[in-house]
Length: 344
Image (cartoon, rainbow, N blue to C red; front, side, top):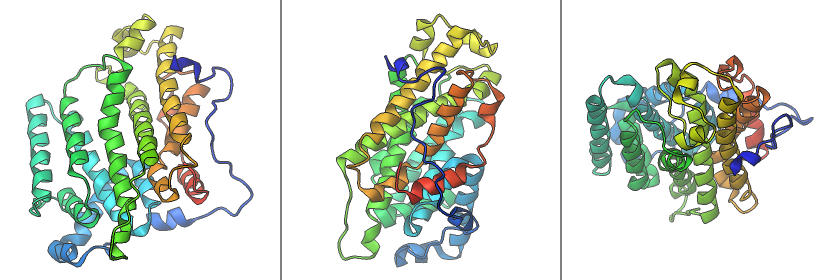
């Protein structure tokens, strides 16, 4: 079982880029002070957006910075010509992700999901609604010919997840992560792969099977870690979404998490789930030597995933430990170094 992957009491075997002796780069903070421009946009897109281009671009950036800070930092490290499209894509994901917690009734949530389904349809008909994220997503679709199926998969899966039900098993959680987080990575790879369209008469597509496999595993790890990180928040709202099969295996009930029980069997549940996330990271990195280098920026989120898994091991898998809720102030530097060394 995956539980054997993480050692308890020993160092977590996740490779973290060392600081080294090279001069510390400062480029990430420089980029953070700049708004992603639209210089690389096609003329038709720029003309259609008109004077609202700056405001819609800024809206997506600010939404991401406030709601998905790690995704915001990772997007800053993408190539300049891909950055604004990545911001739009992640802002779209944030809009969908926050529906569940922002509505009091499932019906309202379904109406919002219906709006986004129609929005995606309209985007591919060159008729996006006058909504900031929709307009920026439309520009990204026009620039990079993004696959509509991945966008719709994200919406469909988020829609199914509006029910307040725990995942029946770890596979169900992984399927959810595949259809949301992995789909987001597939689209990011398309943004990176097709960026040369603007510079050449033909498109060079890096649709590499190994890159897709790495994206699949990283997306699943992201989904599992997100579920773990959100457990204290969900518990405060009397909700538990951790896989029931693992809870039952260790004789743990949802009430144990609602009461913030710290018994060994509760920690064993977290240990097993965290080990599964680590296993996916390990699989993704096994493709490192065969994945095209220009796909690496799409996978920088592994730095934050690895950081969380190390922290949770250090507190002996106490999911409610206060240190797990603290922001890592060194994350921007760690991301920059990983990008600089061309690793994921």
